[in-house]
Amino acid sequence: MLDLNQAVIHESLLLGVMVRFPKEAALRSLEATASELGLKLKARNIPDADYDHWCAQQGKPRHILTLLTRAVTAAQLAAVTSEIAAQGLNIDVIHRLSGRPARGETEGTRRACVEFWLRGQPHDAGAMQARFMDIGVEHALDLAWQKDDAYRRSRRMVVFDMDSTLIRAEVIDELAKEAGAGEKVAAITEAAMRGELDFDDSLRQRVATLAGLPEAVLRTVADRLELTEGAEALVANLRAFGYKTAVLSGGFTYFGEHLKQRLGLDHVHANVLEIADGKLTGRVVGDIVNGPRKAELLKQIAAAEGISPRQVIAVGDGANDLPMLAAAGLGIAFHAKPKVREEAEHAVSTLGLDALLYLLGVRDRERQ
Image (cartoon, rainbow, N blue to C red):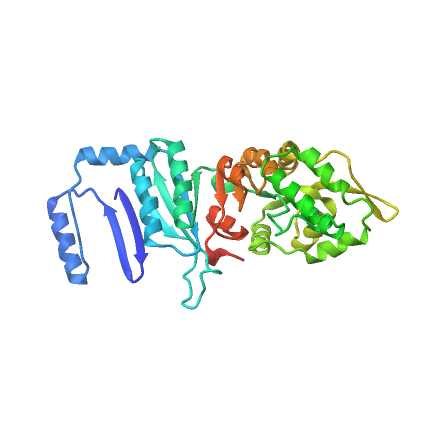
């Protein structure tokens, strides 16, 4: 017995066996037995050269390609598998991680995931990644390409940006609305997240507009913040699976601590708003949590938890998240600005945050 595989596809059972027979009569006996059992048997001889080639494939690199979308279509599969073939890769396994959609389920709430197990080295990895990005735009899907190694199977911590990642809003913009400077600050925030402005300078400029704002407004804003789609489900599952979680934010500790309590996060690092006599002074206290600082904090927390950075997943949407995404074993641009999508190794733009569970290989039926 040289190899054995079985798959059940709907109501059909497929059993593949590679066997070395001592005598030709053994195959004829097997064919007769299959006929008696009402089974369809297809047999072919494998030349020695083909067997040797098959054995040689065992040392080739293996990768996981994850397709994320609201509903899988034939056009999506055709585009993805055509690029896989063009890159000289072999598909070993295709399976679905998402559950079967109910007939009445709407596309807006649906999520679908198909995972490809691939073998081989792409002819041009850069061109392949660029083509995957184009396919994503053309067919409303996301494609995540991961090396299938021990680190991929042993992630242990996830770190998040906060604003526009864990929550739907930019907190500084919400505070500025309360201070009567909403439009001005929102424009600065947008430019900073696109990487067009120095983050430290832009933060000081925006915080300055909050001078004189009553401290009680922080609670008002915190109470109206909405979680991003899938955030609560993702964090709950990560906690159940034993992952450590952290927020590394260019926003503010008050709101990070609010989320920590709400979601049960392990670590929070963000900027501290200075408050005097019950009012915001328009300044921050201490060092600013900018892009380089986020990457530094990721490494510090991982070291303190006894975790390799390669076992960390980082998620963010702005240009100031790029160093953090690069420092992690798996960096994901989540519904991100164009610059971030282009420079990050992976991007999720079609589904909610709980799509990250698919990148860990978690099936819908395994969710807590």
